[in-house]
Length: 303
Ligand code: C5P
Image (cartoon, rainbow, N blue to C red; front, side, top):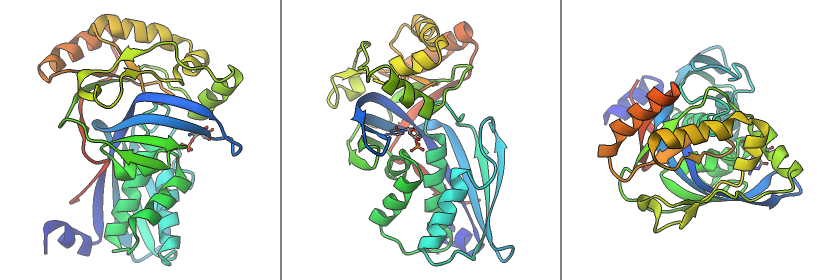
């Protein structure tokens, strides 16, 4: 019996939920269901990350949630994607009466374009699957994930991938090991739905700002552009100035992740990292995560 099996028998599993970054994002058009078809090169990164803990309890039945940490704009009840994911999996497994206590430690801000809610949902699905030894194949798990949020299938798969459709089609790609990346969190957040609506209102713009792909991903994509950037800057005009200041401080190009507001700066080597992080912190006085790409989106471990 390995350690994780023993922990499961004790009735608790911890899952680390990694943030995602979009390094390139094209919006192909609005669909009849209101969602948008995308083509986005997406990676999992070590930091920031959330932690989901799930525990089987004899009673009460149903899913309970406790949220701690960076809780701004995070629902604490049945709207939280942790609860929605847990309930969906329990129903699918025919165990909807089961008591599951969940704890969510948030570090990925809601409204940062880092897929925090989706990462939490993916972590919950995998943690409960392990906790209750639910037999479910990967395709079904991805299907449940897609019904909860557009980024959940990617977070379940993790690593590096092209996301297509509204996010449910995942084509994994391989990256050189552990690419160093700096994640920068502006002091303002933006709502994803509002940014997509602005993209429609603006007539579906393609981003005019194209950045040469950093060396680590040059084999996968030639230029990095995010079509949601003009819409995000329309919704939150302070983003444009923030990005300019960030690029001036780093001396490198910054990429908006998803609908924003977080930016990433992909580095060529680790040696640059501490210097770049210091310069950004000093100039912008905002949270900066010194991070690296990961080969998965969720890590299961001991409590
Ligand atoms: O799927 P999720 O709940 O994360 O999406 C949040 C909102 O972002 C959706 O309600 C939708 O308005 C918008 N969206 C979209 N097209 C996508 C993903 C998200 O229009 N591919």
